[in-house]
Image (cartoon, rainbow, N blue to C red; front, top):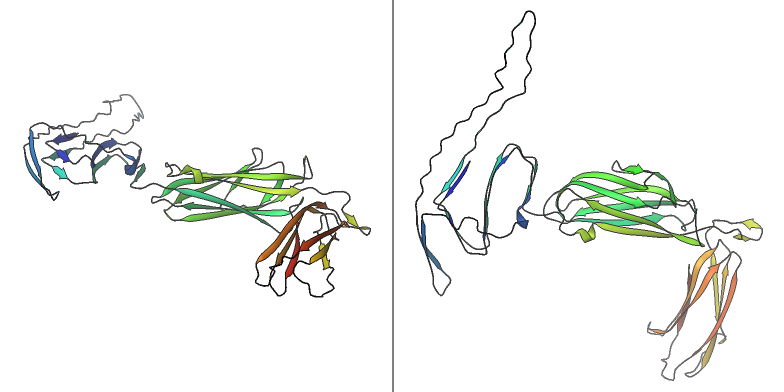
Length: 372
């Protein structure tokens, strides 16, 4: 039972929330998400006078009255069962329960700005959640490996979940939808994660995550090298996290991780020694035609770069060439896409550089580097 009489609210930017008599029900309420409203401003038997001066000081004269009478009778009956007979006789019945709950609010005036007052009458149990904030889950993914991304190379996946909100995130579940075609031998799963091989994903029940708290999970797997349509393929993981409460920002509840994995080639040999799966070994030699003699402005210098791979295949090689003046500023920069460098491949690159008439006096440094 709830009685509300002669209750006034002032100021439309505020809110008066009256929540009562949740009888043995499930409560899941975020008080920050309620609309601003005034549900009781039409109470009867009420007069009110509000005066406001130029300094925004409010004088309120309010007159109201209320008469409340509660007549409550609570009874329970299990059914009036009886038994007669010879020998042992039993009657089994369920429990019977009767209860009453009363809230009376009378002659209560609330005046203010940007406020909220609430009466919570939980009559039953506290199943559910009552929060004055909202969780904001974030997930980030990273992968690490020793060596190049080739078949049978172990990869360690690590996922971090953070609650950036101002309320607890209950019943947090993290899921990883991995590429089961190109990932095998999943092992070392932390935080009691469960792998679902047939569906190709892993789940973690992280339980509750307080505001500002984080948890981290990881596992190790191998790249399979199977089913490549080209010399390489992208091994993708899709990661998501959620809780049983509404999240403040679902955009950061997901992350995507991709590894460019290469397949092995039959011609990855050098000098009769099979080096399949070996690391590339790139050697760079660079020279110019100055014979270590000085040059003058407007002179042209011819450069030669020799790139040789004596290790395993280097994929998608790129040669970078940068020249710095005596002050460390870049005065020349160029790059060449070398493609794949198989074992024993050797490339020769020549080019010329004209020095401007305004070139400063000093030593110019030229650096060449190959990335693959």
